[in-house]
Length: 88
Image 1: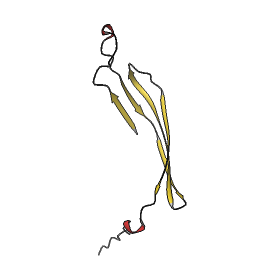
Image 2: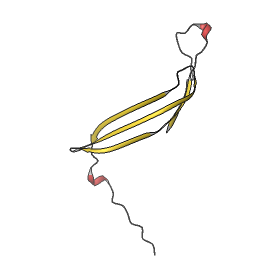
Image 3: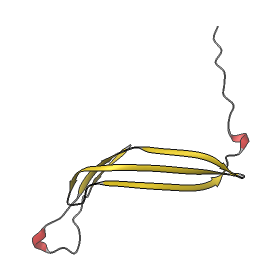
Image 4: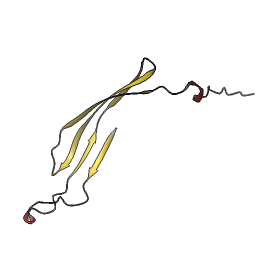
C-alpha cells in the first residue's frame, strides 16, 4: 500500500520573501485488517503504517493508524452461493 502527496497551491499567510512553500511526500508501508463477530454485529480492526520519503517542505518519518469499527452484519440472503463450473 502507499500514497503520494503533492501540494499544488501555495500556503497562505507566509511572508512574500519565503515564496510558495509547497510540500510533497511519498509513503509506502503495510496494512492488515481483521473482521470478527460482535454479538449480532461485526467488528473490524485495521492497522496501517507508512514510511514517508522524498519529502520536501515537510517532515519525513513514519505515520501509523489504528481503526476500529462496528457495523451490522450483511443479510444472509444477499450473499449468492458459489456456482460450480461444469465442464464436459
